[in-house]
Length: 198
Image (cartoon, rainbow, N blue to C red):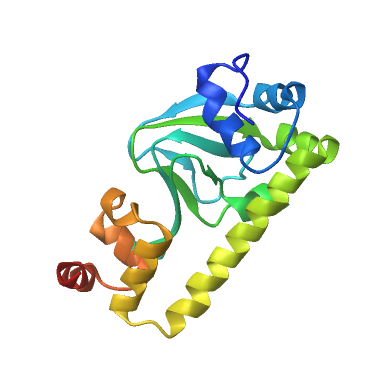
């Protein structure tokens, strides 16, 4: 099923995302899209700061977002990256409404569709199709996190880089060496050395 022409172009990527996962009638699809609002983010703009309580979920039309932490020494560790056609938020804070222990940042100039927490869970509670999408987002996030955590325990640097290329082919083209290295748990110099061997 293709997105309906009644849905504005700005919402077509979101409509395509939903339709790629579930058959849903156009009235419900339009209703879902109506809860999202366009937001533009500048390069490096922080959308959610440490200790903020997260009250929004973002869908990426164009650009990229990352979730990262910052330790007492000022060292960043990237935990999650999202690109076009993906959702992103500071999920633990979004769910439990406690202060975020991480940051959500736009890596590039980005065009986003944002939905408030209240509206998001209204859709989850009233539309079974959206509830299933939410469950799939959670399940995919959990599976990817487990693969990264447990897979990385036995991977050397080369295997880590091959894994990220296989799972997200554009990752190393879109993300700086420093951020990519922090996500992979290796040094930027090691990452550069491994990339030169591929």
